[in-house]
Length: 275
Ligand code: SAH
Image (cartoon, rainbow, N blue to C red):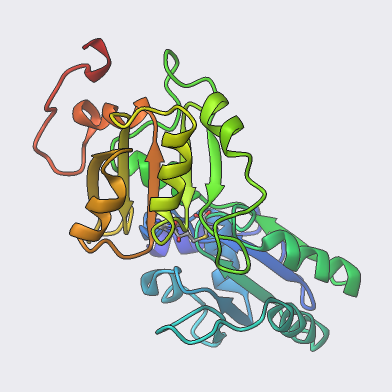
């Protein structure tokens, strides 16, 4: 790690200016999936404002002198209001701090990074965006699921399972999604999967369609539930699946039968698509 630390604090990286905020993705969990820009930011920041899904090992790489502020949801307590987090970032930057806002996955994928960046713009604070590996791509890869595959998936659709009110997103056009989107990658969808699956089945998707639920993706405790669209809601309850989990609905989910590489068990089928 020390060699990497040297790289990340080196001159070839952009200087983290006092009074600025960097919105940085920490990836889905495995510390090895952090970018060098993110590592450089951790080494340089005066204060790290982090979310619930950021691994402790990643936070351990922060400059020991940096203040660490938790801004996520914990133990069912209400999460800090988004506006309050943005105001805090602005106040810290105005104090002359190098402010690292560290988020799980990618800051611009269901991470409210856009909202925080807009608040920084309105306040006249300089900022930088450091993308991260999003759970819906990297997490699936750890489960042996390519998010696209040439013959079967011409598009991928990322969906959130709940909106700000906690309900399933009311604006989603389910008939259109069911018809036109061969691969669906669902974030934050464990609670409402029954309703979501019902919309898809009711609009023509097959109950046999492969589904993978990847829990704690990329972490040592990762679990993968292999199921179908018809069974996914019941199976999630039966296996007591808890967030964080990514749900992949589509034929590509079956590629795991050949491409699962984490278990060390080898392929169960050489080409699941050939059948
Ligand atoms: N910005 C993040 C997403 C934040 S929303 C990203 O790009 O990945 C939080 C949701 O992300 C969780 O409810 C879950 O659906 C998904 N997620 C994040 N990390 C995960 C992980 N390690 N394993 C499975 N799902 C994860």
